[in-house]
Image (cartoon, rainbow, N blue to C red; front, top):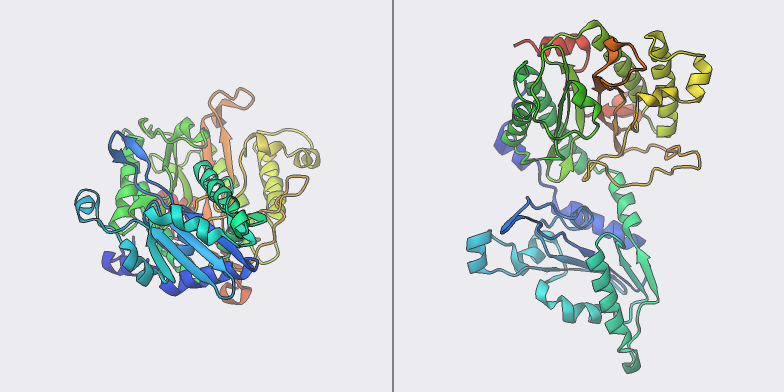
Length: 456
C-alpha cells in the first residue's frame, strides 16, 4: 500500500484564492445587470445538549467563497462594477477560548479576496439598503426555509420605503441552477484534490480487505477505514460508511455496522473520504474469508463485467442513458445464463427484468456532495440524457442483490449482495487515450487481485 506523507498531503489540499475569485467571476457573468445575489452559510447543528455535530458548510456557499465558518453571508452585486461582500462572525477572545478561533472580518476580506467584510450582526440594517434599487434578487430558493423567510422580510422592508423614492427588485430568481452548473464541471485544482481523496480512499479499502476476518464486527472494519482516512489528512468520511456483511448488503443504505462477520459471507463496503470538502465514493465487495464461493464468484464477475463495459463507454458526448442500456443487456443475459432469470432474452431486456436484482441507478455526479448537483436532463422516459463533458466526475456502480428471503431463486444465490463502484473523470481522449480516467483504479476489484489482497 502506498503511504502518503501527511504534511505533503495537507499542503496539497488547499485550493488557491484565485480558484474562488474565478468562480465568483463566472457567477457574476451569469447575473443580470443591476442585480444582487445572496448566499447563506450553514449553521451549526446541535447533537446533544451543548455539543454540535461536526460542522459541514453549505456547499454552494463554500464553492463561491472557500469560507468554512458558520453563520456567514455572501453578497454579490452586479452593477457598474462587480462587488462581493461577506458578513461573518467578529473576533471574540472570550468566545474563542471556549469554542475555537474565528477568522474575523479583517482576515475574511484579505484572505478570501472580498471587496469588503462586515460583522454578521449588521445584516439586519445593511441588507435592505443593499437590495434597494436593484432590479433582480437572486438566492437559492427552498434551500433553507428560515432564510427564505428572512429574504422576504428584507424585501418587504425595502417595499415599505418605496414612498421615499426607493425601488424594490421586480424579479426574484432561484440561482441554485446557475451554481450547480458551474459545480458540475471540475477545474484542474478540483480534480487534483479529488485524485488525492480517492488515493486515500483506495488505501482504506485495501486496508479493510487486509483486516477483515470472520468473527470481527462490521464496526471494527469501519474503524480501519476511518483510521486510514484520518492519518492521511482526510478528517471525515464523505458519508456514513456502509460496512455490510452477508445479507446486510441487500439493504442499500445499511449503516448500523454492528453485526458479526461470518466465514462464508461477502462483505460489501461503500465508503469514501472527504478531502477539502470533496467526496470520494467507492464500493468494493469481497469474501470475509478471502475466497469467493462458486456462486459468489459467478455473480461478482457478472457485475464486474457490466461495470467495466459501462466505464469503457464513458467519453465526451455519451450519456447515462446509453450506459444503462448496455448494463441492462449484460446483466439480463448473465442472469439468464445463471438460471436466475428465465424467458426470452429480447423480451426480458425490453422489460428490464434485471431491475428486480439491480434496484438502484447506475451512477451519479460526484464532487462537493456525494450525490453532487447538476442537471441529468431526464426525458419523459426517465432516461438521463445529459451528454458527458470534459471535467465531469461520476460514479459507475452496478450491483446485484438477492435477499435471503427471496424464494423465487435457488437457495444457493440467496443472501448475496454485490456492488462495485468507481469514480470516473471525463477527459479529452488525447490525454488518456480512452476518454476517461478511473480515479479509483488503485482499489483492486478483479477476483484474483481481491483474493490476493485478502491474504493475511
